Length: 189
Image (tube, rainbow, N blue to C red):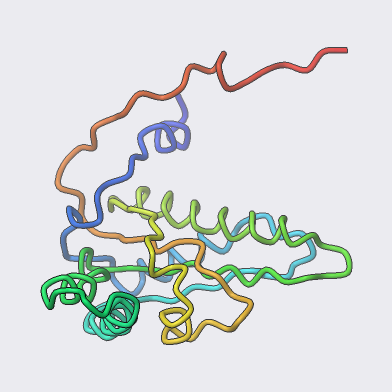
């Protein structure tokens, strides 16, 4: 099996909380983002962008998440609010993939959204190729307008995912995958 196919067949998700430091270096982050941006992009619109959260910036973004949680759940216990503030502290690096899909005269919005998803998947694969583990998640705060505003998203932008990246705790466990005959058909005339 060619090395690239072996890499693709060995990728697994890890729990964000299980990803440890050290995280990727600045040069590795540049590599991750370069690979993430090499996706199909009909019309060359670049209908996505990235927000990098590292170091104490993760905690500052977490404060916005905690504030939104407290506003949404005013009766929440202090420990619940504190836990929400730690969401982006679970891995040493978190990269948000932001979908900038918008109406266009020629390019359907759906294709733009898919391009953002492809960017997130390329990011996950690039992390795996560099020896890191990754977890692509959204959770409630990816859909909360107050959090999105605090993170600098424009009104039409959405989070395609927060990709948590760090050193995996060990080899990943595989999970059952659907048999190909259940998910693939061949069209015939």
